[in-house]
Structure formats: structure tokens, C-alpha cells
Length: 244
Ligand SMILES: C[S@@+](CC[C@H](N)C(=O)[O-])C[C@H]1O[C@@H](n2cnc3c(N)ncnc32)[C@H](O)[C@@H]1O
Image 1: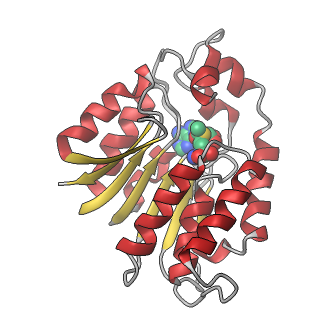
Image 2 (image 1 turned 120 degrees about the vertical axis):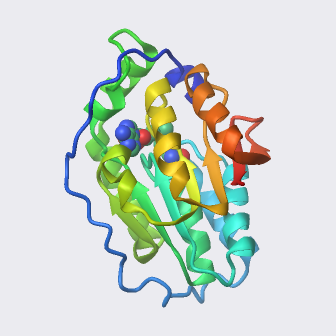
């Protein structure tokens, strides 16, 4: 569905800028909260998978489950720094933040400008991506994302950065888990990989969404030079890499 609606060609690379000065202040409550109502990892995963169809976005139950398993098991006694580029309605933030909440530690930085101009960047009028993003009410999508955070009580595990990825690329010292799902044009997806991969710890993880798009091919090739593909979900559309 997503592929059909959004897949297209890239055009020109236009300079984006700071739309809003980002703040990377970590919420004070991080690491202190646990959720006594969800006792097992299986319960958390069930709640998330039941919630996904009610959210704006494209995260499958299969992907959400694997994202949660990675955090719950691999980072059980650590405080992972997770970064997601491209949030939309928060469908993939939900599993990430719920897994952090289950463990009682860590943070996910959720980067998205929620601005039509940024979604149109590198696409030309008439392109299927251009036409689709032009008609999306990103204000409403952003509001649905805020409602989702409140509903699941995950605000203290999620730090929202209303900005382009480029504007905040240099703000991170260390990333444990990176999820790349922003602007899918060739230039933007490649730029996301090139600028954010150096921040990922050796042994850290990278989820790359929509790997089957012709426009993300170069980004996937770049990722493959510096990390090992270790898992595949949604029939290969989303890949998990581990950095060398
Ligand atoms: C495919 S959607 C994300 C879907 C979401 N991860 C999910 O699983 O449902 C792509 C998102 O990237 C955002 N985006 C566009 N340009 C961006 C940029 N330069 N930096 C960060 N996010 C961007 C859009 O606003 C949009 O919400």
C-alpha cells in the first residue's frame, strides 16, 4: 500500500533549513518509570499490535514485535538511545517507546518536521509522492501523534524533535538504535544514512524502512558497507542492520 502510494523518482536536491531550533533536552522522568499494569513482554506486544490499526502510519505488527523484542531483550539492563527519522502518526514510535517503558529505561528521539514542504522535497509535481504528500493534513497527523503519546502514557520516554533530520544530525553523540523512515527520495534517504550512521555505536542497530524502493537503493548499499544485515521484516521491505 505504502509502496504503491509513495514509490517514485527523485528530482533535485534542495537545501532545507532550520524550521525550528531543536532542543535535545532529555525528559527528567526517563529511567524512573515502569508500568505496573503490563506485567509481561507478551502483554506489551499484544497491546501495541492491537493499537496499530488505530494509528496513522505504516508499522506492521511483525515489525513492531521485532522492534520491541530487540529493546526488551538486548537492552534490558541498559539505557538505549533510540532515534527515529520520520515519525508521522507515531506507528513505529509506539512499539519503541512501549518497550522502553516496559524496561523502565532509555529514550527515543522522534524527529519529524511535520511540514508539507519537507515531504515534497526532491519530488516533482505530478510524481505520485508529490501528489500524495501534498494532500496530507500534517497538522492533524501531528495532533494524532500527540494524542497517541498521551493515550499510552509514553511521553516521558519519547522526546519529540519537530525538525528536519539534517538540522539535528550533529546533535547526537551516541545512538544505539536508529530507525530511518523519513523522506524517501534518493538524496534524502542517502543523506540520512551518511549523516546518522557515524553516530551509531559499533554493535548498534539500524532499522531501514522501505528498502524495496528504487530511491532508497543507494542508502541501503551504503548501509551494507558499514553494517551487516541481520534480519528482514515485511517481506524484505524493512531490514535490520548491525553496525560493524
Ligand atoms: C513514511 S512516513 C514515517 C512513517 C512512520 N515511521 C510509521 O512507521 O508510520 C515519513 C515521515 O517523514 C517525515 N519527513 C519528511 N522529510 C523529513 C526530514 N527531512 N526529516 C525528518 N523527517 C522527515 C514526514 O513528515 C513523514 O511524517
